[in-house]
Amino acid sequence: MKMRNGLSIAMLGLVLSGCGYTPEQRATSGAAIGGATGLALGAAAGGSPGAALAGGVLGAATGAIVGANTRPPPPPPPGYYPPPPPRCAHWGYDVYGRPICVAYYGY
Image (tube, rainbow, N blue to C red):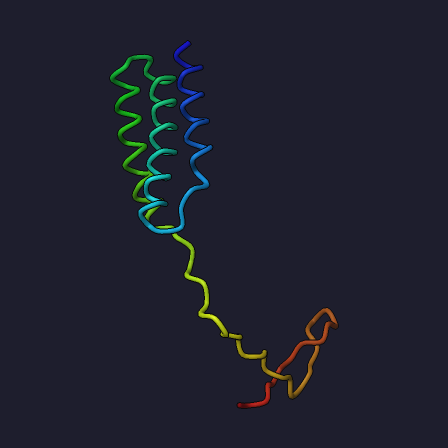
């Protein structure tokens, strides 16, 4: 029964994991995922409420730290286009006979 409760809490954390773009939202969802997973692992490993609580607290803290520090890069500003790749000035061949660029035109 304990394992089923732990797994249902872990599944709830996984459902909430897709939420958030800002660091605060990602920290919150990371804490939910980490706490649920830590709670489930602590209950399965220790079998006591203290072990489950310790696993949940450590998992939530770790998940919040990791979630806040792994945010995606911000989107580029509107109207930004990356520069074109440099044009090849001289082609050579690698050891397998595939063509490779060995010199580029300067800009």
